[in-house]
Image (cartoon, rainbow, N blue to C red; front, side, top):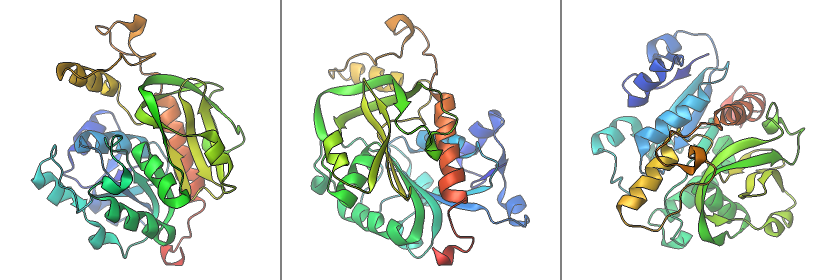
Length: 304
């Protein structure tokens, strides 16, 4: 089934080349069906790339999904054109009276900043609070996950001595959890972060459950008991070359960075990485849409 996005969004052409069913607004408006309304708060600097990555995962479902893109008004994007932001992105003031089946809050390259020092922190706090009443299930990714855990539960991250960078094997800690349905006993997830979480801090909060874990990279997915808030420390949405781009970018800038672990074949940077996390990423997002957005959200969003 299709994903509905703006006909002129750059991601549309890329997705159609991959045989992803992207529906036009005209066709979607004529269907007698209640689609899922998803909003993505995109905090990543590479906005167009992130749009495509997330839309690709949201499209792998038998459900029609309407997607809106949200930006923070208190921070101006330096890497994406103003025309793109004005055309495809809304501000919080424009959507704060709406209700949504689901929301995704992305990561952001802000590991070295204290939350209160982030220029858009006050706006992010308003959005976190708004999700409690206007979104059924919110998925927080990487920085979005750490910031969400801090805002909702007061959980502080732990700063790592060295960046967690690479593709790591994971396992489910609750194989019966719907979010883990269909995943292999061992599945792979890319990580690129300088923070970690302390399991004892999570254990102290009765409303939280660690769903998946890696012996190499630590906690992966945390959820509240109703799965209204899901926190993911990794990046299942990453493309094959996303970690490579980050590595070569930092090398070109003379920044200290190790080669991403378990990524380049034979650890040779001249070889094309094997994409061993695609199926797990598709399953996690499809399970989220099915079990915690589609099946749980009221048909009338006014009853949220």
